[in-house]
Length: 242
Image 1 (tube, rainbow, N blue to C red):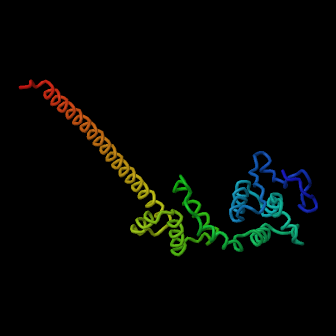
Image 2 (image 1 turned 30 degrees about the vertical axis):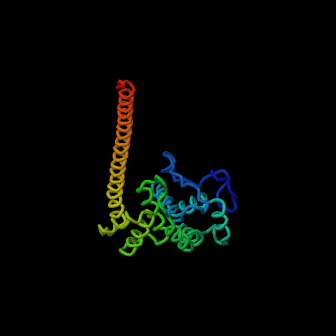
Image 3 (image 1 turned 45 degrees about the vertical axis):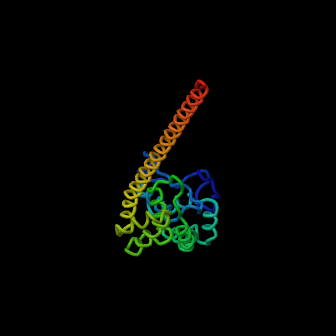
C-alpha cells in the first residue's frame, strides 16, 4: 500500500480510501499502481474494471485513482494546483494529457514500421504486437483505413517477401483474416521446404552410393588386370626352349 503525503493525497497516511459498508464484507479489487510507463488508456480501463467490480461512486473512483499514482505520474498530478478537488473525470483528462498516446503516436508508428518477426517467434505473438502498436499509434477505431495500414505493417513485419506476396494474393481485408492466411501459408511453405530438403538429402545419398560402387568396381577391375598380367608372365617364364 502506498504511504504517501497525507496533505497531498487527501488521505490519511497508512490508510486506503473509505470503503462503503456494502463492501466491508467482501474483498476489494485494488487497482495496481501507475507510474506513467504503461499506456494510459490501458491503465484507465483497468481502473474502470475495478470500479465496476467494487461499485465505487465517482468520488471513490477519484480517491482510488489518486492513491494508485506513483513516481512521475503522482508528481505530474500534484503539479496541478486544484488536484485535491478534481473529480474522476478531471483526473482522467489530466492524466491523458500528460501520459496519453497523443504526443507519443509518432513514436509508436515508428516502432510499428520497424517491427520485424524475431527468430522462432509465433505468428500469434507477432500479430498481437502489431495490433497493440496500431492501437497506440492510430487509435482503436478499426475502419477500412485502419485495417489497411495494419495489414501492410503485419506483412512487412513477417520479414518474408515471398510469403507476403502469397498472402496478398488471397486479398484479406482485415488484420485477423491476414493472420489466418499467414498461418496456413506459412505452414505450407515450411512443409514444402522440408520436402525439398528431404529430396536433396536422398539425391546426395544416392550419389554417395554410386561413388562407392564405382570405386569398388575400379578396385575389382585393377585386381583382374594384375591377375591376367601375372598369368602372362608365368607362361612366358615356363615356356620350353627349342
